[in-house]
Length: 170
Image (tube, rainbow, N blue to C red):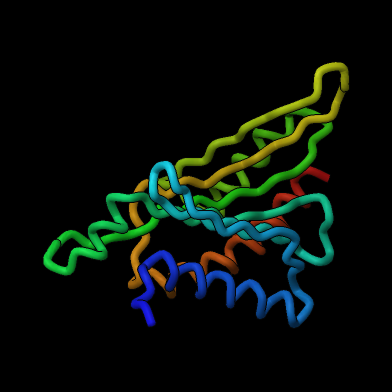
């Protein structure tokens, strides 16, 4: 038996909370990726879900751990506190780029001014009025096991974000 890493513990908590909401019919899990990066020796977990009543927006949680944090955790004499990188996002189709200001306003209202919000816009050349918006909330700090309650609360904020983003773009 192995001792699970901080990454494993956080992943299990996130996955369990989201699958519980899927079981009761509030959310629908639509994709899940659990990858080991052999070249750089890291781990990456992504889970994608949507509100069952809103098809237009998908939300995701990205959890990553790099070699430095894995080594820190495995070396028990190291006094640094290992952690994971966290990013959440919302993917939606837009007919106009004017909606980006509303998206920024909604996410800033819910997540606060101290979070970095990035919007990546993509489109297929030759199409008009069809944009894909990937709005990310970046946490510029490591997430640790003592943040588990914050992660669970964050899921409620994500559900609220989906609903408010839907109202802003429709």
